[in-house]
Amino acid sequence: MMRLNPIVMLMACLFIAHMSPAQDSLCLTDKVSSFPAYFLDKINKRTSGLEAAIISKTERYLKKVSKEERRLKKKLFRKDSAAASQLFPDPASQYRSFQNSITEKINISKSKEYIPFLDTLTTSLHFLEKNATFLNNSSVQQSLLRINKMKDQFQAAKELQRYMQDRRKKIREQLGKLNMLKELKQYNKKLYYYQAQVEEYRTLFNQPGKLERKAIDMLTRTKRFQEFMAKNSLLASLFPQSIGANNLATQTALPGLQFTSQVNTLIQQTIGSGPNVLQSIQSNMQQAQSQLQQLKDKVNAMGKSDEDANMPDFKPNSQRTKSFWSRWELGTNLQSIRSNTWLPSATQIGFSAGYKLNDRSVVGVGMAGNIGWGKSIKHLVVSYEGVGARGYFDWKLKGSFWLSAGYEMNYRSAFNRIEQLQTLNVWQQSGLVGISKKYKVSKKMKGSMNLLWDYLSYSQVPRTQPVIFRFGYTLK
Image (cartoon, rainbow, N blue to C red; front, top):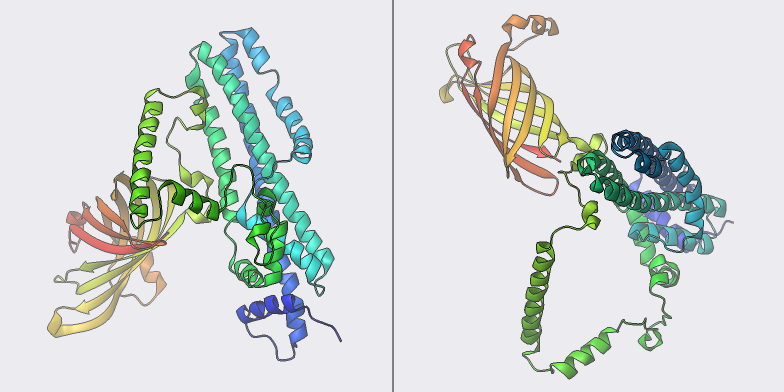
């Protein structure tokens, strides 16, 4: 009979709890057997997807920067042909040569970038490879291979960033001599957004999925994994130590670092151990922070150096580094409509989908439905009173206030057939402009209040209300 490893059983139970009920004929062993493949498949898809994204982004960036250097070469050639030929010999072949040599730089590089979840995931797979005999080791090794390939791409991107920063510094120095620094603006933009995109990929990977987070959480509850993690993770290699079960005396201190007990002893020897020690420490910290702020002000007063080229000389658009779908925001809002001779009072419920062009502007579309309430409170009748289509644009003015504009068409009566909506002259038009106030409700939700003027309301029959107030919510 097959012997199930306790660790795999523990993780498999978690997986089974999150899966939908299977067929009755599916036995426990089959369920447990499906867990490793599913878990490793999740890891493989995620790492291979990020690896491909980094490769694609790097290739596009190098094509753009090669084109930009050819443009700079033409500009510089008009003023100093010798400097142009020396600084820009052949941008395309230069970057191809760099790409060919970057693999050797990664292999001989001893420095490793620390990404918390990547470190935990890699160490977890090594632990399962050695301890979970029920797992297929070849599948684990395949996942580790994909992770290492992704690591190489992160490292390659890091090497490229260093190379481009050095190259930008050389170009900046040469163009500065000829008063041509403004020509470097597009070059700086491309490098900045490439760095920001790679950082976005790193952040995305450092946010584990629900299954990964739960599985690793279950592993961390086992003592054997805790000991393995403390000895074999990348973080452990950065801070090597010999850990006993409950023996702090076996720890090996790094030069320049002290244990908590040593720091506590030093504080007691310097300040004392009376009841006013905490107040004394806080007072000294405030003085130190004040002196540090004065030092920062002096440094800022000296102005920027050439090394400050890493700081963008333009206002970055953080939306450019996000994926297409993450730039959308879904929303809903409510609006009350007064009754008149032809129409009852109603509530218009709208739904919208907005795309963030940048940090200050959103363009979107939406639709709405009208619910009628009757002529008055004495004649309360719930009815369906038509539909509407919307298009809108929001532009940030200042703080939480936005300028809003939109165009809407509303069919303000009930209909039984779709063909009734094809007659455009029965649709009422609205041209809206006004101010919106947006405020934070929670981490993933924000509220909005809109005060709008319908400048087309005066020409509509029946005439609609010119001033509109709406409130609603948007999911980020």
